[in-house]
Image 1 (cartoon, rainbow, N blue to C red):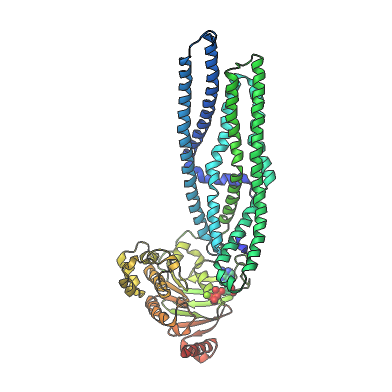
Image 2: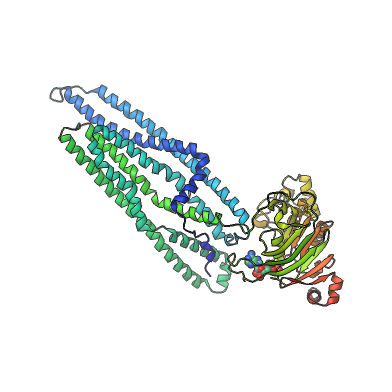
Length: 613
Ligand code: ADP
Ligand code: MG
């Protein structure tokens, strides 16, 4: 019952380092801006340390100047020149902090979102050659949305990991070098705390929180279950099954929570520990500083407070990395899964880069074909051979019909012709060229397909038809629409070709959807047209009129028509009957009726049905 598909992409073990390297390759085009963001961040935090240090130093300096001028007892005047000097310094440092802070944030996010967009594009293109053989697992709405959230979760890696990590190393180095000029002993004391904050903390968190993969996988399962439940709510209620589904959801949810709690309790521990480390670090700095001041090694009123103030900035910065560590780990898990999906071997390899030249005769020969769907591809696959030596011929220019019981492999013939899957043995030839010798793109130009539920995009009629030929003019589109029998509909709707089809074509009728698909095929003007139950989902009357459009499209072309209602294919040049993946009868309608086999029996049965209508 639960959506097993939700765990798609649980990755094989690849080290985090490899994942990071790969994520960084996506950043390459933006390296310049990323570098600017980094420099901005380093300057910003160094500037902040400066502001605090200057303030602390300035107060001491003023007190010293005031005392030197005689102090309160000596009636010294307010030392305005000293005050202005420090205010000027602080104002300059503050302005630098402001500007670099803006630059850092702007460039950081600019880069992150650009990279994400590029990443999504790459992901999409990586999935294309995998479709549909490897993406069938992805078809549930859950999986698609999960892929999108996984993409989003990579953002913190670019926006909140790289720059903080590098700044967490560079800024403390700058701070420590300044402290060194004050007194080397301070540096010896500070270094262990910086190291603990930057390196030890993340390590502790990863020990406490696991890798979070468990939580992410469960989250996928919960999403899948919920979306499944919402889609199936009518049937769930109709069968009184809602209580049971709710209980099941609770169980999955509880295991997810465990993983979640582990991950985020580690996060909370990390934040608490960081505060402890920082406090102890500041105390240590104060202690060693005070010691040095008492020994007369450093200036007590200026250098001592400045050292403490500056080191505080360093401390907070050094935990910045640890604070983003949970986001970073989630990003790693997301990236790992996306990469695992992208890295799947395509089921079909486009190994032919040289185009088959010249005119290819649309003569299709299938010889001794064996094929079986990969059991891994779909849980519902019966893992049995679909074809065990299929042989059939489609002569150029002929209209061939392919009929037979459902599940016998008719659609699979089309899948193999389009090379959406590859056969195991045997051969498929077009005009005496092996199917494999065509580049996939050429092959796609060769065929036009109209299937039972052709996909209609949420766009206008014009754009949906244009898929057949991208550069088509309006006149061509209209001509194709007319040939498909859409002329009346287009003329009658106020928007004409601009009529919106709605999501999956929900705003137009089933007959119109099929006509749009036919118009697409007309526009494509491919030598071979494949109809896969193109009219099966229509009522008898609509079917009749759509068939007229199909016939028009078939004229002068080589066609293979898979049909359920035999009355629609009686005048084909040849009818092939496929049973259990074999052609068991073939011939014209008349000769098949004489043979009195499956076809004749089926034809008579369907006639009776129509008569009783
Ligand atoms: P038909 O079009 O004749 O009804 P198909 O060619 O669609 O039959 O299916 C032939 C067999 O292959 C059926 O047993 C079906 O369950 C199986 N099958 C079809 N598509 C897939 C797929 N994508 N993955 C696994 N098995 C499939
Ligand atoms: Mg089918």
